[in-house]
Length: 595
Image (cartoon, rainbow, N blue to C red; front, side, top):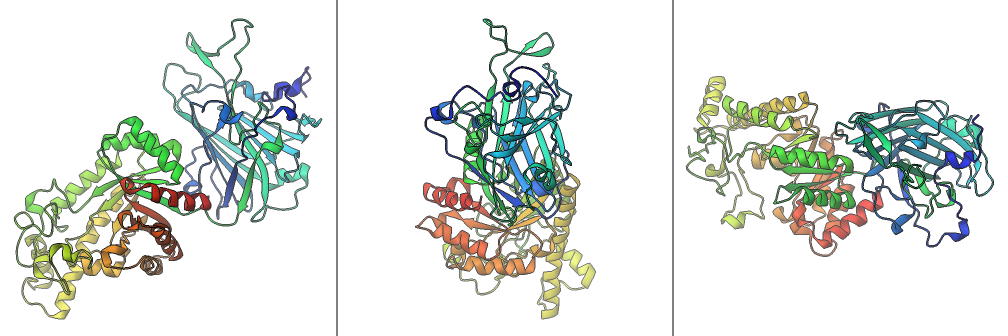
């Protein structure tokens, strides 16, 4: 046991000689919902276990004294989950100067930059726990009978038995010559560790509330020669006071005021369904991108489907990482403005898109049966898959030209498409026709009987499916996710755009359930999603909503409710520039309620 004067003060840098009665406006207490995970989480410090993916991050840490101090310059956040066996904690701390020296367990860890957790299971401000860890993974844990103000004593010999911790560095430790980014922490604490002193009876049930808080100690460092040293006060020769950044501010420089800790509420539900948004590049600087990411984070949006160049994808992926926002490259797949005109598809009349456009001038659909088309797409996808930090690739226009337009769009082109019209029936590129003729001995351009016509449709679907399979395997070989924007249901897709998406075996699907395109009310969204989840009960299906049609009143909230009631695994918004003040207020009311 360490014996030295004022050990309580040394152990806890946050204590000051400020009586509780001196606290002025106490900061609001924060709350975090701890969601249940069905399987254990691998604790290796990387935060890469799939169970973490949809667990929401906490609010960014702020100064321990609250809003009277400036916002910390480095982002710190945590997230938590639970299972039958463990309480799981993860944290990410931005850090341009990774520094740690202490290697002995139960040393005074906050003398290094550290991360700390405080837990009071029954919330009575007595019998609580503290854990500190530095970037070397060195731990200190202790038990408090009550706070120091209340006369409590620490027990440094007590340990969180059975706990697993791991640290991962995004950079190198104690090396000023290079550039560092952050460090991440994972913990798995068995429930019995909390029972040893508090005699907690069982695993917390749904609705159980604990008191909890987290803090980060950050020291001012200077580079002296080739090492880091703490910046000292010239008058005293002692290190300048540390910064204390915390999850739920206490209002005073003292973490040991458990009455001012936040709340941890346990939920038996799985994590909230993920929100996504489609985004084009626009004219954004690095700061503008960071502002947009902060906005998305505030809204609770956790995924971006971003259409831009590889350099911007790399930039945004790196900026999005601290927010826990995934970036997927949004790529127009079969409809390509840079396609060789020889690859462009033909309709049943023998007209090529190279000379006769369908509907709009930007329709440049390639035929999937052409080997050079597949080679071309594999190159494009390979370039995207090599972008550092990217989490996935999102295919759009992975289909043929519309054989039948949605009913709400037909008047725009002075059409009434009760059936497939030959000038809009595509897939008749000579290369595809020849392949079909070699296999079946029939020319699909001639009058076909019902059986042959079904074969021809299946053949076209199969050629697109084969292209998708190639791209899917390429993306998976890069350990990335692959998803697609698709028409509302598999049956509608096969009829309208020759798209057989429920057979593609992708990681998720984003059906564009744009009710106004089909002259439907928002309750139609529920019916569509119910059909999709019946078809694909085990695969995430994210409901795409068209924001321009949902600006009036509470139409957006009704559409979201309809989608989630229908079983949607998430919501995708088309697109970010249509997130108006009206929409923003409704998104917050929904996502903040979920979290």
